[in-house]
Image 1 (spheres, rainbow over the protein chains, first blue to last red):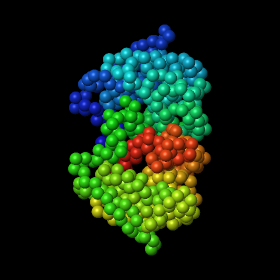
Image 2 (cartoon, each protein chain N blue to C red):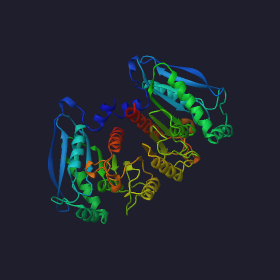
Image 3 (cartoon, rainbow over the protein chains, first blue to last red):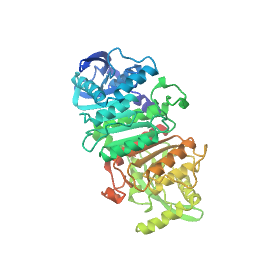
Image 4 (spheres, rainbow over the protein chains, first blue to last red):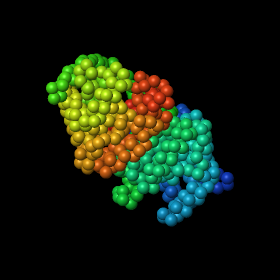
Length: 258
Length: 258
């Protein structure tokens, strides 16, 4: 049973497994004149409209990690679009550049929200996407992103944050958030501390949001990404159990909202 | 998809659905000379050894709630045993009596742990139970119970606490807990406050336990039980979303540990 669950969790069984025709392509789009370059993945063997899932990258910009997640979502039968927040060609080469880029959006939430909405609009336009069944998932910087998308009142059924930043300069009020929220959080994440979790819970409760927050033992920041390495003492590290469990939790969440 | 998931979550699809032969019986057993009266449920159509799940009652004692859960677990293919902590015939009629009974075990954790272990031993003896695949779930008082069972080093693969009390007078040290833990918690439970959650997280982290803790928005104490009523302002109330989601989380957890 374990193997099947884990394969399913990894999106390796597919929906129409034997018949799956997984394809992908680069998609350029614009927001306020800025060219953005995303990655679209879907299963050509699936017929009819299906849910669309936006994938929002971590602070290094659109990477293999998000492309892999989009492919895994395509294998589950979704149309997945890994958005580009930073802009075509802007892919930080190191932590200093990533910090500068991410900081730009952390410091200008209306701009961040507009970039996220542009990605969502682009996803909605794609063939096969049911515009009434949309969700967004994001990692670290992108985890904060999907929460900002939710706070902006975006027309999605749900968002999932994986080790995302939970704080915001534009907290939600009752009625602002129209979707359900799932937060997958490393219990000992040194970058998203207990105080930030407590503040988020308070914000969500006050805004009467339908949310779930899961804490995974031993998990720090970046726990879904193998590129985070294997040393939790560095503050970010891959954690296989938390990675698999959070992906399964996302699947359950999608089964509920779609 | 939603309907199937929810039916599955409720244990209504069964494992061999068409062939299911759900049966149950009262089982009396003893702990240190005290006669206890539990409830055993299983599917007679399932062949061979299967996992066994202990169900531990809330402070009113073994009730229809636990019998229903045992039946649901049987429909999922497990052998389920709703244990009796208080003793044959001891079924509190009101909150005062419940408080007195529960208080007796809260105040004597070694006794509580012995009663839990007696239930587990009884489950292990039942026909069809694979002694290497055991788990325990519990509600409120019983949620604390299964955590105490874990802290005692009991030989189970995992425990699940639903709106259980998280504090303890006998916290775990590294190596004490040999199983995985899932805690399903109401985000605004007024009886298990944020400080208790924080202390629990600290205890589990220090003891190097593999755990997950899920918080459900808008859920207070007793959120899985219809008998809790519908008024969260009373501190305990049924919450359908949290009930279904936590049951699904338990299923995922069982898929991982068994």
